[in-house]
Length: 386
Image (spheres, rainbow, N blue to C red):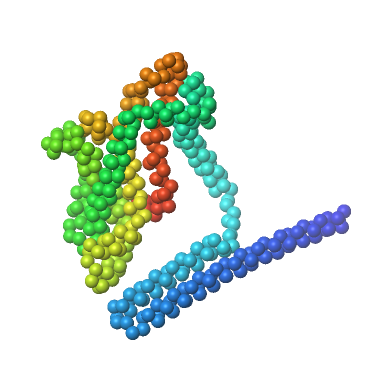
């Protein structure tokens, strides 16, 4: 028995040693790959620096300073590339979490999964119902996936001229309004981000004051009436030309992400404020611009209350007003389908509602994947201060 036990222990020790040797070999292999990539980065960096140093010879002091700035930027890029290579190719250290942390993270994941299902299921149900037959929707057969696949709802929706009219108006309001919003917001955010601007605290207070206090619906309506904005498409664009929340985000982004040394260097080179704004500030603020563009576009696309209050002609109505008529007032044209029976007509009414919801929301949802990569940087920087 003793010999058998010793033999078993010896085998386990050998297995453990072989496992450690395999892990070490794998680690050394990763280190070799990492070193190879680091060497390539260093070689490219050295070649670029040598080229800039060669250009620097014989230049005046200002031009040489510009070369030094470029060399400094290359050094920062070299360090960033090395860190990225280490994250991608370097050995990963597994951190063992204590039992309390494991329980905590498990509970968080369960709660997030439940919230995801609660939010995602209605969306899946609406899309599935819009692609199902009217009879399947009316009899409650649709639970998760489409039943008796059909596009009749979409055919009926796109036959309605109000849908195309609403689409045209909504696209015009969204594109035009977003352009006005971005231009006005950046024009206000940039001077407020400059340390040298006089009374910028007072201006910031006035902007912030409007977030907390307003005149009310009736005084605002009277003002718009005297301005000639009633039943005017510009009512969907001009009154909300600046979103103060987005203005604060943009101002904070410019303050925290664009160094003041860049402005000093540009002024030494004879750069005007307007040229500095268009040549330096805007290219460095692309992530912030992408985020607030999406915020403004979503706001214009979903706007219906302003149109509901101030617009009286149907030719100016956005798509959301027509969607409201269908969802709340059940104004659906079913004259061509009455011969199919009451159950079929009732089902078609629901299918039309679901199809119109998808038609009204799909275009703006399609924008999210294109600006998702900017969200963490654009939103989090703006939320640090302000």
